[in-house]
Image (cartoon, rainbow, N blue to C red; front, side):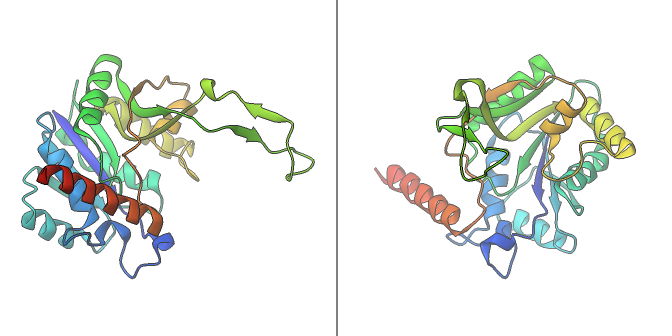
Length: 240
């Protein structure tokens, strides 16, 4: 079985909106529903779980019914951090998965995830035990000078780094056990930590899968405008 755990627990302060950004309507559809539709449409995804803001679970179910997200099986409350939300989602499905099952973890505010990206992250995870969607980094990266933050004498060779995002995919039993251990140890669960960084905290290799520049994370108004532009382009291509 392949389960998609979609994180929708953020408050979205940077969007300057009265509602969380994952529930903002774009062309009469909440951003989160665009994300769920990508998983609904993919033939290898068997079930979807949404980790939602406490108190918003009912709205997720209502929207899922409205937009025919039939694969949605669970909605669980998130935590006070991304890692707590991931843990909550994993523990909620612990008795539903086993053996060679795969769990995908994805940000609910990445609504433009391609079907090919989902296919590849599943393939690599099945082959290697985990997969993290990634892309080359094409900008120059410099290191801030420790004595003067206004200057630098050191750069990072960009060919040696990758930028990663979601979707990420993991052997279900392995990642659930790792999160249990991490929260017992108090390790790899603070700040901007995520499932992939937690893996490396425990010395485990992470394998790259296909990424996409289109797979933007909607953080602020500029991202929202870019999302709308992508949708307009796709609609225009469809009309041709």
